[in-house]
Image 1 (cartoon, rainbow, N blue to C red):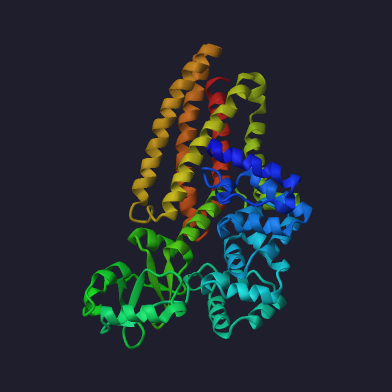
Image 2: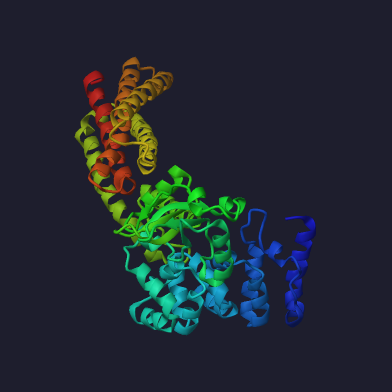
Length: 482
């Protein structure tokens, strides 16, 4: 933020308590609300809270009205439920609709409870069918029925058709509004149709889908190509092949196809091959982000409890895998118990054995992260599994050898015992080799069993590296040193 803007911001804040009824936002209030990284400024959030505390609805409407709907949704996440309830009446139907489509699921459910069914129905009519269906899906049974009953018949039919598909599938993700034309239409006819159709057209579209008499897509005419062609040119002459998406395809598979073929939009077809909707790249960006967040959280064994979640909600989301981890840790600790006599004879073992387990755990986590990413991006499959596994085994041996040399030298400097150096060096080579092997085989096995490798792999890999680390180091110590 520039110095001038910062000064204006401070002046605006100071003006609130002095004369709140006359406070008028500066022309660049939106710029003041956002930092250089487009994140909301904390001082701006405080201004909103202050206006709400004073009950100054006009000032609150000015502050919120200066923001784009995406920023209003972000603002909601920084406020408590009471403040959010005061902001809702400040939003017109179109803005409310866009804010609802941008809100996190847990916040959206709470906000929906505060909106009257009639007002909510009016707002949903401003959205594309896919976004409207996403919002309606969060409504409870009675309120859902009330909202659908209050909607326009055409909009209601589109939402109900979207809700008929399984969650996280192309059918749920697609928007039913689509622009299609027969292949014998000319460019001129098509452009005239687009101009005359007006509100009947999708809000956002990149291609005109060319369909046969059975309404099956046979190609697509990009808008950029359409505008460059002469009016007498037929659509059949400029159409390009399309990549079709089936309504029951998983959204993660759809995102993979978009990424692989660099698609901007794609037609969605039903079981009979008929065009029923389209998916655009803006929807896919959201899917990619959602799937990435799920994988990151799953690797840590947690779920997204949200910014407004209570202590118990957060604890409950993290507890299950901690319980499993407790059991696996107990099994690993049993190895130490089996060698307590040897540890009692040489206390140095108690100092060094956590090092072996820790380095193995880190190596296993590195391999696991690479393997999960490769599986998610389809870079790892049956055709190259053997090569990748052999590569990771070799990497484990190389890294184990390097760390064995480093730890061997360090151990000799501190303890002056060549046999102890040999013991920890061999244990490190064994554990890093096993860690790399577990890091690649565990997610592969879970994927083969049709389980999400990101969810539970880390627990099993940590168990393997701890167990192997303790067993290899203490076992070798018993053979070599005692």
